[in-house]
Length: 362
Image 1 (tube, rainbow, N blue to C red):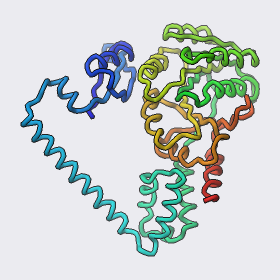
Image 2 (cartoon, one colour):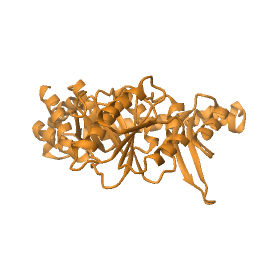
Image 3 (cartoon, helix red, strand yellow):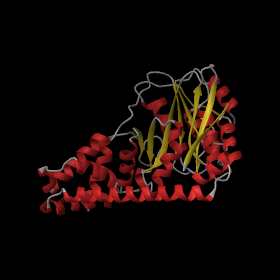
Image 4 (spheres, rainbow, N blue to C red):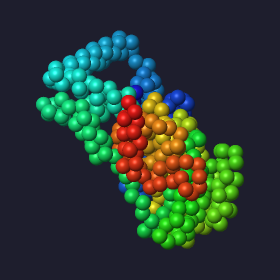
Protein backbone atom coordinates (compact mmCIF):
# COMPACT_ATOMS: atom_id res chain seq x y z
CA UNK A 1 0.00 0.00 0.00
CA UNK A 2 1.08 3.59 -0.69
CA UNK A 3 -0.03 6.61 1.35
CA UNK A 4 -1.02 9.87 -0.34
CA UNK A 5 -2.19 13.15 1.22
CA UNK A 6 -4.89 15.43 -0.20
CA UNK A 7 -5.34 19.04 0.95
CA UNK A 8 -8.51 21.18 0.90
CA UNK A 9 -10.35 23.75 2.98
CA UNK A 10 -12.28 21.02 4.84
CA UNK A 11 -11.89 17.23 5.40
CA UNK A 12 -14.88 16.36 3.22
CA UNK A 13 -13.49 18.15 0.16
CA UNK A 14 -10.05 16.60 0.62
CA UNK A 15 -11.57 13.13 0.89
CA UNK A 16 -13.66 13.74 -2.23
CA UNK A 17 -10.43 14.55 -4.12
CA UNK A 18 -9.07 11.14 -3.10
CA UNK A 19 -12.26 9.37 -4.19
CA UNK A 20 -12.24 11.22 -7.50
CA UNK A 21 -8.70 10.01 -8.20
CA UNK A 22 -8.86 6.44 -6.90
CA UNK A 23 -12.53 5.56 -6.45
CA UNK A 24 -14.53 4.51 -3.38
CA UNK A 25 -12.07 1.77 -2.35
CA UNK A 26 -9.54 4.15 -0.74
CA UNK A 27 -8.60 3.42 2.88
CA UNK A 28 -8.67 6.43 5.24
CA UNK A 29 -5.50 6.73 7.38
CA UNK A 30 -5.79 10.16 9.01
CA UNK A 31 -7.52 13.53 8.81
CA UNK A 32 -6.18 16.65 10.48
CA UNK A 33 -6.28 20.42 10.34
CA UNK A 34 -3.02 22.36 9.89
CA UNK A 35 -2.20 26.08 9.85
CA UNK A 36 -0.02 26.83 6.83
CA UNK A 37 2.65 29.51 6.56
CA UNK A 38 0.15 31.94 5.01
CA UNK A 39 -1.88 31.74 8.23
CA UNK A 40 -4.78 29.81 6.69
CA UNK A 41 -6.18 26.59 8.16
CA UNK A 42 -6.38 23.68 5.74
CA UNK A 43 -7.43 20.08 6.13
CA UNK A 44 -5.13 17.21 5.19
CA UNK A 45 -6.60 13.77 4.55
CA UNK A 46 -4.19 10.85 4.17
CA UNK A 47 -5.38 7.71 2.36
CA UNK A 48 -3.80 4.37 1.46
CA UNK A 49 -4.12 2.76 -1.97
CA UNK A 50 -2.61 -0.36 -3.57
CA UNK A 51 0.82 0.33 -5.06
CA UNK A 52 -0.22 -0.73 -8.57
CA UNK A 53 -3.21 1.64 -8.53
CA UNK A 54 -1.08 4.50 -7.23
CA UNK A 55 1.52 3.99 -9.97
CA UNK A 56 -1.13 3.78 -12.69
CA UNK A 57 -3.03 6.89 -11.59
CA UNK A 58 0.12 8.91 -10.92
CA UNK A 59 2.45 7.85 -13.75
CA UNK A 60 0.28 5.96 -16.23
CA UNK A 61 0.90 2.41 -17.41
CA UNK A 62 4.42 1.09 -16.72
CA UNK A 63 6.19 -1.23 -19.13
CA UNK A 64 5.82 -4.83 -18.03
CA UNK A 65 9.54 -5.64 -18.37
CA UNK A 66 10.83 -3.13 -15.85
CA UNK A 67 7.86 -3.67 -13.59
CA UNK A 68 8.39 -7.44 -13.54
CA UNK A 69 12.05 -6.98 -12.69
CA UNK A 70 11.28 -4.62 -9.81
CA UNK A 71 8.58 -6.97 -8.59
CA UNK A 72 10.99 -9.93 -8.58
CA UNK A 73 13.53 -7.91 -6.57
CA UNK A 74 10.86 -6.86 -4.11
CA UNK A 75 9.64 -10.43 -3.64
CA UNK A 76 13.21 -11.65 -3.10
CA UNK A 77 13.79 -8.96 -0.46
CA UNK A 78 10.55 -9.83 1.33
CA UNK A 79 11.48 -13.52 1.32
CA UNK A 80 14.89 -12.71 2.84
CA UNK A 81 13.29 -10.54 5.51
CA UNK A 82 10.83 -13.31 6.33
CA UNK A 83 13.64 -15.81 6.73
CA UNK A 84 15.56 -13.37 8.94
CA UNK A 85 12.52 -12.93 11.21
CA UNK A 86 12.19 -16.70 11.42
CA UNK A 87 15.84 -17.10 12.43
CA UNK A 88 15.54 -14.36 15.08
CA UNK A 89 12.47 -16.08 16.49
CA UNK A 90 14.31 -19.38 16.72
CA UNK A 91 17.27 -17.67 18.38
CA UNK A 92 14.96 -16.18 21.01
CA UNK A 93 13.51 -19.62 21.77
CA UNK A 94 17.01 -21.16 21.98
CA UNK A 95 18.06 -18.55 24.56
CA UNK A 96 15.66 -20.08 27.06
CA UNK A 97 17.20 -22.82 29.19
CA UNK A 98 15.57 -26.22 28.50
CA UNK A 99 14.45 -26.60 32.10
CA UNK A 100 12.81 -23.14 32.00
CA UNK A 101 11.03 -23.64 28.71
CA UNK A 102 8.06 -25.55 30.10
CA UNK A 103 7.44 -22.86 32.74
CA UNK A 104 7.71 -19.99 30.25
CA UNK A 105 5.57 -21.70 27.65
CA UNK A 106 2.93 -22.68 30.21
CA UNK A 107 2.57 -19.13 31.53
CA UNK A 108 2.73 -17.62 28.05
CA UNK A 109 0.01 -19.93 26.76
CA UNK A 110 -2.19 -19.11 29.76
CA UNK A 111 -1.99 -15.35 29.14
CA UNK A 112 -2.48 -15.79 25.38
CA UNK A 113 -5.52 -18.00 25.99
CA UNK A 114 -6.97 -15.20 28.11
CA UNK A 115 -6.51 -12.62 25.34
CA UNK A 116 -3.04 -11.07 25.81
CA UNK A 117 -1.16 -10.71 22.51
CA UNK A 118 1.92 -12.82 21.80
CA UNK A 119 3.85 -9.75 20.60
CA UNK A 120 3.40 -8.01 23.97
CA UNK A 121 4.33 -11.11 25.95
CA UNK A 122 7.42 -11.76 23.81
CA UNK A 123 8.72 -8.24 24.45
CA UNK A 124 8.37 -8.65 28.21
CA UNK A 125 9.79 -12.19 28.32
CA UNK A 126 12.78 -11.21 26.16
CA UNK A 127 13.82 -8.73 28.86
CA UNK A 128 13.98 -11.58 31.40
CA UNK A 129 16.52 -13.74 29.58
CA UNK A 130 18.83 -15.33 32.16
CA UNK A 131 16.60 -14.36 35.11
CA UNK A 132 15.58 -16.93 37.73
CA UNK A 133 12.02 -15.59 37.40
CA UNK A 134 11.66 -17.66 34.22
CA UNK A 135 11.94 -20.85 36.26
CA UNK A 136 9.15 -20.03 38.74
CA UNK A 137 5.59 -19.93 37.39
CA UNK A 138 4.20 -17.99 40.37
CA UNK A 139 6.92 -15.32 40.17
CA UNK A 140 6.57 -15.07 36.40
CA UNK A 141 2.78 -14.58 36.57
CA UNK A 142 3.25 -11.93 39.28
CA UNK A 143 5.90 -10.18 37.19
CA UNK A 144 3.65 -10.09 34.11
CA UNK A 145 0.76 -8.70 36.16
CA UNK A 146 3.05 -5.97 37.53
CA UNK A 147 4.13 -5.10 33.98
CA UNK A 148 0.49 -4.88 32.93
CA UNK A 149 -0.23 -2.59 35.87
CA UNK A 150 2.71 -0.34 34.93
CA UNK A 151 1.65 -0.21 31.29
CA UNK A 152 -2.00 0.74 31.86
CA UNK A 153 -2.85 4.46 31.83
CA UNK A 154 -5.67 6.36 33.55
CA UNK A 155 -7.09 9.71 32.41
CA UNK A 156 -7.65 11.69 35.60
CA UNK A 157 -11.10 13.21 36.14
CA UNK A 158 -10.74 17.02 36.15
CA UNK A 159 -13.42 19.69 36.03
CA UNK A 160 -11.29 22.69 36.97
CA UNK A 161 -12.16 24.51 33.72
CA UNK A 162 -15.15 24.53 31.34
CA UNK A 163 -14.90 21.88 28.66
CA UNK A 164 -16.70 19.98 25.94
CA UNK A 165 -16.71 16.19 26.01
CA UNK A 166 -17.52 14.42 22.74
CA UNK A 167 -18.19 10.68 22.81
CA UNK A 168 -17.49 8.67 19.63
CA UNK A 169 -17.47 4.97 18.88
CA UNK A 170 -19.02 1.99 17.10
CA UNK A 171 -22.78 1.43 16.92
CA UNK A 172 -24.46 -0.09 19.95
CA UNK A 173 -21.76 0.44 22.59
CA UNK A 174 -23.96 2.64 24.81
CA UNK A 175 -22.74 6.19 24.14
CA UNK A 176 -26.09 7.84 24.89
CA UNK A 177 -26.58 5.97 28.16
CA UNK A 178 -22.99 6.75 29.18
CA UNK A 179 -23.62 10.46 28.49
CA UNK A 180 -26.68 10.34 30.74
CA UNK A 181 -24.61 8.79 33.53
CA UNK A 182 -21.88 11.42 33.12
CA UNK A 183 -24.46 14.22 33.11
CA UNK A 184 -26.00 12.98 36.36
CA UNK A 185 -22.56 12.60 37.93
CA UNK A 186 -21.40 16.12 37.05
CA UNK A 187 -24.72 17.84 37.80
CA UNK A 188 -25.66 16.10 41.07
CA UNK A 189 -23.03 13.68 42.45
CA UNK A 190 -19.78 15.67 42.62
CA UNK A 191 -18.40 17.80 45.46
CA UNK A 192 -20.31 20.69 43.88
CA UNK A 193 -23.03 20.88 41.21
CA UNK A 194 -21.76 21.73 37.74
CA UNK A 195 -23.86 23.40 35.05
CA UNK A 196 -24.29 20.65 32.43
CA UNK A 197 -25.83 20.72 28.94
CA UNK A 198 -26.39 17.95 26.38
CA UNK A 199 -25.80 18.40 22.66
CA UNK A 200 -26.87 15.75 20.16
CA UNK A 201 -25.21 15.15 16.76
CA UNK A 202 -26.75 11.71 16.27
CA UNK A 203 -29.19 12.50 13.46
CA UNK A 204 -28.67 9.06 11.89
CA UNK A 205 -30.13 6.93 14.64
CA UNK A 206 -33.92 6.79 14.92
CA UNK A 207 -34.97 7.85 18.41
CA UNK A 208 -31.52 9.12 19.44
CA UNK A 209 -32.79 12.66 19.99
CA UNK A 210 -35.81 11.43 21.98
CA UNK A 211 -33.64 9.21 24.19
CA UNK A 212 -31.25 12.01 25.13
CA UNK A 213 -34.13 14.47 25.48
CA UNK A 214 -35.81 12.05 27.90
CA UNK A 215 -32.73 11.95 30.13
CA UNK A 216 -32.41 15.74 29.91
CA UNK A 217 -36.03 16.23 31.02
CA UNK A 218 -35.61 13.90 34.00
CA UNK A 219 -32.44 15.70 35.15
CA UNK A 220 -33.73 19.16 34.16
CA UNK A 221 -30.76 19.83 31.87
CA UNK A 222 -30.51 21.94 28.73
CA UNK A 223 -30.58 19.83 25.55
CA UNK A 224 -30.22 20.80 21.89
CA UNK A 225 -29.62 18.91 18.63
CA UNK A 226 -27.70 19.99 15.52
CA UNK A 227 -27.02 18.47 12.10
CA UNK A 228 -24.32 20.68 10.55
CA UNK A 229 -20.90 22.06 11.44
CA UNK A 230 -22.38 25.57 11.42
CA UNK A 231 -25.15 24.43 13.73
CA UNK A 232 -22.59 22.80 16.02
CA UNK A 233 -20.64 26.07 16.37
CA UNK A 234 -23.86 28.00 16.99
CA UNK A 235 -25.00 25.46 19.57
CA UNK A 236 -21.72 25.67 21.47
CA UNK A 237 -21.97 29.46 21.44
CA UNK A 238 -25.49 29.28 22.88
CA UNK A 239 -24.16 27.02 25.67
CA UNK A 240 -21.05 29.08 26.40
CA UNK A 241 -22.05 29.67 30.05
CA UNK A 242 -22.13 25.95 30.90
CA UNK A 243 -19.34 24.16 32.79
CA UNK A 244 -19.62 20.89 30.85
CA UNK A 245 -21.17 20.25 27.42
CA UNK A 246 -21.62 16.54 26.66
CA UNK A 247 -21.83 15.76 22.93
CA UNK A 248 -23.48 12.59 21.63
CA UNK A 249 -22.42 11.48 18.13
CA UNK A 250 -23.73 9.00 15.60
CA UNK A 251 -22.75 5.42 16.24
CA UNK A 252 -20.87 4.19 13.21
CA UNK A 253 -19.13 1.20 11.75
CA UNK A 254 -15.32 1.52 11.72
CA UNK A 255 -15.66 1.05 7.95
CA UNK A 256 -18.15 3.90 7.39
CA UNK A 257 -15.69 6.46 6.01
CA UNK A 258 -18.31 9.09 5.20
CA UNK A 259 -19.60 9.25 8.79
CA UNK A 260 -16.04 9.29 10.12
CA UNK A 261 -15.17 12.23 7.84
CA UNK A 262 -18.31 14.05 9.01
CA UNK A 263 -17.26 13.52 12.64
CA UNK A 264 -13.79 14.90 11.82
CA UNK A 265 -15.44 18.13 10.64
CA UNK A 266 -17.21 18.48 13.99
CA UNK A 267 -14.03 17.69 15.96
CA UNK A 268 -12.04 20.29 14.02
CA UNK A 269 -14.57 23.08 14.48
CA UNK A 270 -12.91 26.27 15.70
CA UNK A 271 -14.20 26.53 19.28
CA UNK A 272 -13.05 28.71 22.18
CA UNK A 273 -12.75 26.02 24.84
CA UNK A 274 -11.15 22.64 25.38
CA UNK A 275 -12.65 19.70 23.48
CA UNK A 276 -12.03 16.19 24.83
CA UNK A 277 -12.78 13.28 22.52
CA UNK A 278 -13.51 9.96 24.21
CA UNK A 279 -13.76 6.65 22.38
CA UNK A 280 -16.48 4.43 23.83
CA UNK A 281 -16.21 0.72 23.21
CA UNK A 282 -17.49 -2.43 24.83
CA UNK A 283 -15.69 -4.67 27.31
CA UNK A 284 -16.92 -7.50 25.08
CA UNK A 285 -14.77 -6.28 22.15
CA UNK A 286 -13.55 -9.08 19.87
CA UNK A 287 -9.82 -9.54 19.29
CA UNK A 288 -10.36 -9.47 15.51
CA UNK A 289 -12.10 -6.06 15.71
CA UNK A 290 -9.49 -4.24 17.84
CA UNK A 291 -7.27 -3.03 15.01
CA UNK A 292 -10.23 -1.80 12.97
CA UNK A 293 -11.72 0.14 15.89
CA UNK A 294 -8.42 1.76 16.81
CA UNK A 295 -7.18 2.50 13.28
CA UNK A 296 -10.46 4.06 12.15
CA UNK A 297 -11.16 6.19 15.22
CA UNK A 298 -7.63 7.15 16.33
CA UNK A 299 -7.31 9.99 13.79
CA UNK A 300 -10.01 11.83 15.78
CA UNK A 301 -7.24 12.58 18.32
CA UNK A 302 -8.67 10.41 21.11
CA UNK A 303 -8.02 11.77 24.61
CA UNK A 304 -9.33 8.77 26.53
CA UNK A 305 -11.46 5.63 26.31
CA UNK A 306 -14.69 4.92 28.18
CA UNK A 307 -15.43 1.21 28.49
CA UNK A 308 -19.04 0.03 28.58
CA UNK A 309 -20.82 -3.29 29.25
CA UNK A 310 -18.59 -4.56 32.06
CA UNK A 311 -21.67 -6.46 33.23
CA UNK A 312 -21.93 -8.45 29.98
CA UNK A 313 -18.69 -10.46 30.24
CA UNK A 314 -16.43 -12.25 32.72
CA UNK A 315 -13.47 -12.35 30.35
CA UNK A 316 -11.39 -9.16 30.22
CA UNK A 317 -8.16 -10.29 28.55
CA UNK A 318 -8.98 -8.91 25.09
CA UNK A 319 -10.01 -5.58 26.59
CA UNK A 320 -6.82 -5.48 28.63
CA UNK A 321 -4.84 -6.34 25.52
CA UNK A 322 -6.42 -3.40 23.67
CA UNK A 323 -5.23 -1.01 26.39
CA UNK A 324 -1.72 -2.50 26.41
CA UNK A 325 -1.18 -2.43 22.64
CA UNK A 326 -2.56 1.04 21.93
CA UNK A 327 -1.57 2.76 25.20
CA UNK A 328 -4.77 4.78 25.46
CA UNK A 329 -5.70 6.21 28.88
CA UNK A 330 -8.96 4.99 30.44
CA UNK A 331 -11.42 7.50 31.92
CA UNK A 332 -14.67 5.73 32.95
CA UNK A 333 -16.14 2.23 33.25
CA UNK A 334 -19.84 1.57 32.70
CA UNK A 335 -20.72 -1.44 34.85
CA UNK A 336 -24.46 -1.82 34.19
CA UNK A 337 -27.62 -0.22 32.77
CA UNK A 338 -28.71 1.89 35.75
CA UNK A 339 -28.43 5.68 35.40
CA UNK A 340 -26.50 7.13 37.17
CA UNK A 341 -25.40 4.33 39.52
CA UNK A 342 -23.52 2.04 37.15
CA UNK A 343 -20.62 4.34 36.31
CA UNK A 344 -17.20 4.52 37.94
CA UNK A 345 -13.98 6.42 37.37
CA UNK A 346 -11.55 4.12 35.56
CA UNK A 347 -9.29 2.12 37.84
CA UNK A 348 -6.32 -0.08 36.94
CA UNK A 349 -6.89 -2.08 40.10
CA UNK A 350 -10.52 -2.83 39.21
CA UNK A 351 -9.66 -3.99 35.69
CA UNK A 352 -6.80 -6.15 36.94
CA UNK A 353 -9.03 -7.72 39.60
CA UNK A 354 -11.46 -8.82 36.87
CA UNK A 355 -8.60 -10.22 34.77
CA UNK A 356 -6.94 -12.01 37.71
CA UNK A 357 -10.28 -13.62 38.57
CA UNK A 358 -10.41 -14.98 35.03
CA UNK A 359 -6.83 -16.26 35.34
CA UNK A 360 -7.60 -17.95 38.66
CA UNK A 361 -10.45 -19.86 37.04
CA UNK A 362 -7.95 -21.18 34.49
